[in-house]
Length: 316
Ligand SMILES: Cc1cc2nc3c(=O)[nH]c(=O)nc-3n(C[C@H](O)[C@H](O)[C@H](O)COP(=O)(O)O)c2cc1C
Image (cartoon, rainbow, N blue to C red; front, side):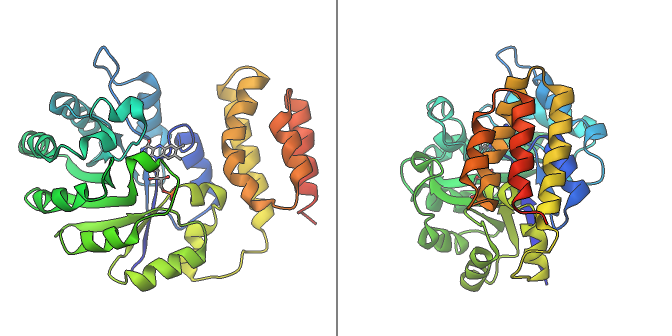
C-alpha cells in the first residue's frame, strides 16, 4: 500500500524530546517536521531551534526543518544553515493562523499576497540547493486564495505541498473544507499531502475513499492523542493493540523523565505535561476525576499520584 505518514509540527509539543520518545516506542511515521524556525529580532536562529534540529538530537528518523518568514534573506539564512547542518529539505510555513504572525504578512497572512509568494520563491529557488516544500492553508480570510496561488506554484521546483483545508481565521476550529481541497487537486502538478482532523482510522478511510489519489497524509493532534494511529493506518487495523495503555504510560514516563531533566521547578514541568494531556485525555474518556487531579496538581508528587490512579483504571 502506498501510504506515507508525515508527523505534523506542533510548536511546544513535537520537539526533539517528543520525536525521540515517539520513534523509540511507535512506528508508522515516515517524516517528522520540526516546529517552525523564525529568526530573532537580531536575525539569528534561536538557541531552542538550534537545539531542536541538531542532528545529534534527531537520530533514527527523518526530520524536515521548517521556516516561518516572508523575507527572502531570512529564508536563505535558514536554508544555508540547515544545508550546512546536513538537511536536504526546508518546509515553508504558509499556514500559521495566529494574528501576531498573520498581521505581519507571514504564515497564512501571506496567502492574500500571491505576488509576494512568487517573488520570494523566485529568489530562493534560484539561490539555494535545498529542496523546498510548502505547508499552507486555503487562505487567511478567504478559502479562494489557494486557487489563485496553486497554478503559480507549478512554475517552481517544489517537492510537495501540504494543504490544511481551513482558512487562517478559523484557527483550528470549524469544519475542514474538503470541497475546496478537491478543487485544489486539479490546479497543481505538485504532490499534495492532506493535513487536517485525522484522529482515527475511520477519518483516514473516509478521506482515502474520497481522495484515492492522495498517498501522503500529515497528522498532528491525532498523532499526539493516539500515537498508535500511524501504525494502525498502515496495518489497516480497526482495533487498538492490547498494549495500548502500557505504551501510553511508557510514553508519558519517558517524556516526563526528559522534561524533568530539562525544565526546572514542578510548576514548569507540570505545565509542559499538561500541554500533552490536552490531547492524551482523549484516551481516558471515563476518567474525569483523575484527569482533573492531573490538571490541578501543584506538585510533582501529587501529579504522579494522579497519573498512577488514572492508569490504574486502564491497566490490568
Ligand atoms: C499547538 C499547535 C502548534 C502548531 N505549530 C505548528 C508549527 O510550528 N508549524 C506548522 O506548520 N504548523 C503548526 N501547527 C499546525 C499543525 O501542524 C497542523 O497543521 C494542524 O494541527 C492540523 O492538523 P491536525 O488536525 O492533524 O492536528 C500547530 C498546531 C497546533 C495545534
